[in-house]
Image 1 (spheres, rainbow, N blue to C red):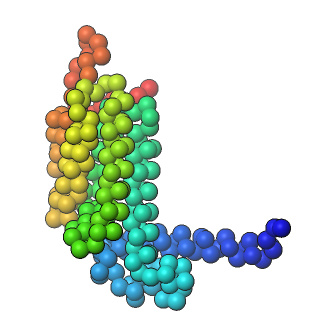
Image 2: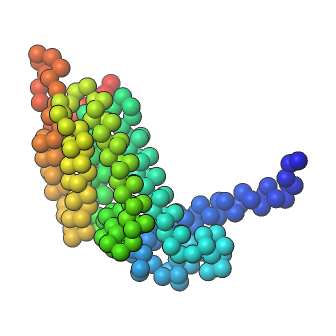
Image 3: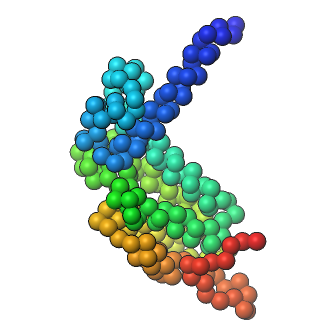
Amino acid sequence: MSRPAAARTQGRPRLVERAEALARAKELFWSLGYQRASLPTLEAATGLQRGSLYALFTDKRTLFLEALALYGDDSWAAMDQLMPPEARRADIVAWLLDHASRAHGRAGARGCLLVETVVEMGPHDAEIARRARRIFDGMLDRLERALCGAPDIAVADPVGCARALLAGLEGLRVLGKGGQTKDQVNRSVSSLVDALLPPRILGARASRSHLRVAPKT
């Protein structure tokens, strides 16, 4: 038996309302952290009263865990888009630059929600630390697959290389909270690329390329 039309029309707006509230809460947690994001600030950010927030998410902690998961999903989606299964060196560099673009200016001042969460709550909240680690692991898995599959990179240890690249990028996100320029960020990424992503010599006339890799045709 199909549901009444009224139930169907009521359900969809509620799902949309929930998704919008979650996205706004994620932005607030990203800017303020868990402790500073009080219920009044969450009400103001989401446009929902406390009772509605509780009805949708049960409590503040559950809302934060879902916001953290959404942040992770967004991070993975960006990697999947920029580093498809047939990724080459240029694709990996493109993702590095995209990720690092949030390490300066106003975006840089916000930092990385994952790093902020681990620093703020990881030492005394094992569940949140585990969930943050799962997101980092997903990022590492994607990097490792790209490094293993790219035919134009000569990397002897993809696992170690992936960890070093991610550590370097997240370090740039931390530095960004104190202020740095776009040029400083790009020079740092260039050094990471030169040190960790040596190009494989594919032909006699192949030459070393750095950050400005020509796009695929």
